[in-house]
Every structure is written in C-alpha cells, then in structure tokens.
Image (cartoon, rainbow, N blue to C red):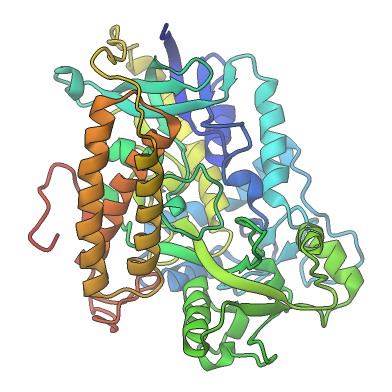
Length: 541
C-alpha cells in the first residue's frame, strides 16, 4: 500500500547541499531528507580535495573572483561568482562551527599562510586557499553534517527513496505555477509514495553517470535536472561536462579519483617513457585548469595509442606523501601501486556537470517553491569550466541562501491541497528488464564516444539520432511497466543526455570544457546556452 506524507520542506538528496539546507532551516519546520540509496551514497562523501575560500590575509576576494572568471573561460556570471566568494569565509566558518575536522596548520610545515588551518593549492588558483581534511574532505564534511542532522528532531533522514517525478500544480490542472511535492519510489516496499510539501529542494547532484567512464558514484544520474525539466524548468550550459584529468587506471579500480591536490603539491604528469608533457600545452603545466589538462592527456593518449599516462609524486618524501594523501596512498597500495616509489596510472573521466537547472541567487527555480542546489543547479558560478574546489563551496553558500529564503517565505506558503496518489493500475511487471541494461550500456557508450572530451558536428548528430530512439523506447517501457530504480535512472539519464547533446549542438565555438573540431576558435561573444521546455526544439536539433 502506497503512503502519503506531508512535510514543510522536502529535500531530495542527502549530500553537502541537501544537509546544509536542512541544518540552516528553522527548527520549527518539518523536513524530510531523502536519499536514493544509503545516506552516504552521493558524491559528497567521496570528495577528496577540499573547499575553496578566501581565508588567509595574503589572499583577497578579488583574486579568488578573477581566478574563477579566468577558469570559466569568459562565461561565468560575475555577480554569482562574487556572491559565492564573498560568502566563502562565513560558509567555512559555519562548517568549522559544525565541527568539521579540517587539517590544522600545526605540523610545523610552512605553507605561506597565517590561517589556523592548512591550506593547499589546486589548478587555476593563484593562492593557497583550499581548506581540507587530509585527502578525505568530503567524508569529513558529510559525517559531521549527518551527525548534526541526526540530532535535530525536525529533520527526518529517509534512505532508499528514489524520486520519480515532481508534482506541479499545472500537471494537476490547477492555475498556479508551483511545485507541490513529489512521487517517490520506496525501495523497501516497491511502492510509489506521495510526498506533499510547501517547499521542495532538489539536491540530487550531477549527471556524470551518462558517460561510460566517470569518477562519480552510481547515483549521479541527473535525476533533479530531468525532473525539473519535465516540470517546466529551464536548464543552462549542459554542454559543459568536466572530465577530471586523473582517475586511477586499473582493471580492478572503480571510480577512484586521484585528487588534484597531488598536482597542487608538485606531482608531475608523464608519458610511459617518463617524459613530462604539460609544458607543451600550457605554461602553467600541471596546474592548468582541468579542461586543458584533460584535453592534453586525451591528445597524448590518442597520439601515442596508449591506455593511460602517469602521475608521479615519488620525488617527494614518503613521510610527506603519507601525511598529506593517506587515502590515495592506501587505496593505490591495495592495487599494488606504492606512490612513494612509483607513478600512478591515470586517465580522464567524467567528473562534474557544470550546467543544470536555472536558478537565482537564492537557489529558486522558475517553478514557485522549487529550489535547486549544488551540482543540480546552474548558478553561473562555473561558466565554461569549474575551478577546483568551488563546487563544495557552492553547495554551502547556496544551501544556506536557499534555507534563508525559505524561512522568509514560510508564512506566505500554505500546505498544498490533498494530492492524488500514484496511479499504476494500468501497468504490469516487466519480464524484459534486459532492455534496460542494454539501453543503459548503449547510452553511456555513445555519449563517451560522440559527446566526450573532443566533439564534432557529425559525432553530435549521431548521438542525437541514437538518444531520440532510446527516448522513444524508454518512454514506451515506462508507460507499460511498474517503475524500478534502474528504469527511473535510465529515463532520467536519457532525458539529460538529450539536453547535453542539444546544448552542445547549439554552441558554435570551442570554449572551456566544450571543444569541437568543427569550431575550434573562441566566439567573440560569450553567451549561455539556455534550453526551455516551453520552447520547441529548433531545426538545429
């Protein structure tokens, strides 16, 4: 039997963005935080690097802003960048107040800062401004915020809940343009429950799982982006998919990221013969922005026909490596790689979705009472290329901004009238789930081959034809059979893949993370790519 729930705030996603929003909201509000799997199954837990912010007296807001604008290749919204950077110190102070155990500056090592905590430097940054907890920052932040949330009686943390679709007033034939809740598959009961809420927050992460090779966990299926699109929200800049340059290349390793902080602390990228190559591509060498490093590695792999390149920090002392990168050291050791003595085999992999659901500075979407936070959203902060460690910062700054806005709107928004239960009376159980597996594999393969690090018009057109066929097949399957997690995720991935391809086809230039051989030059005018579900696809699509 399906259930009906009523909350003040429904937060879909239990990572940094979702937990920050929940903890900042007033304690009198009833809050549900839904996790698609276990609470720790999102990307936050696995983040290694840290949080960027203006923390040391030698650094400035202007410097951080300019570094971000430079990395964003002329496409950042400067107002969004300044808003985020200006609020970086207060957001990090809030994390410290919550008890996050950031690495302190008490090791006797001189790092050139006068801040109480150790700051590292990553690609694109002109200063040391990355606060971290060794090389497991995400786990430290997530564990701390989760413990805080569990202490709050008004926050209900609910695992194994897969959001199917948002419930909007327009879908129910009502006049107002507002979000009223969501339909959610309870994996324990295999029933779709109804969650009614005065406010809904999408904090579902990105869509890197649309690619065959990714550093992200299995949950990164673009769920929030797809649901918001189907509910009538615009999306922006989805052609900009960041490929992290250095993921561990090993047949038994899955999705293990080699943190950029290694390069920040002096690691070298090398070819199999030991030759360094980054100087041929950028004067910043290993500290160039991620898009440049990823393309350089991709170029060398294709030029030489090699399976990987190598990241070498073995010229540093073993003590330094084990102290600063214990997670990477231990994980590599399990695969027989001693990074204190030998280089790490690495390849690029899909890592971060720079575009997403269009929001304002409070995280508000075009649909009243619906917010999108973190990687799900398009704030304008990242432009054409996200600078390292700005992503976690965005979660905290915008999560707190959204929570404050909800608090201000609290007295103005009434609970929605009773919502209809999910109707599955006309569907049956599927006996052909192999279709889901085959379509999943086909989608991720052609997205990697045709919509990856280097693109062409012909590749994008091939991808568009294939995604439209998959769209038709999956919609038909969805209409006739009971939903499952795999079907819901595949439906969302196909939706987002279609949006990524259409966005890439509209950009007739190479900028940041979008590089096409047909338009290798930078356009004179930097314009965002905005798609609206209310506007029919153009002839270009």
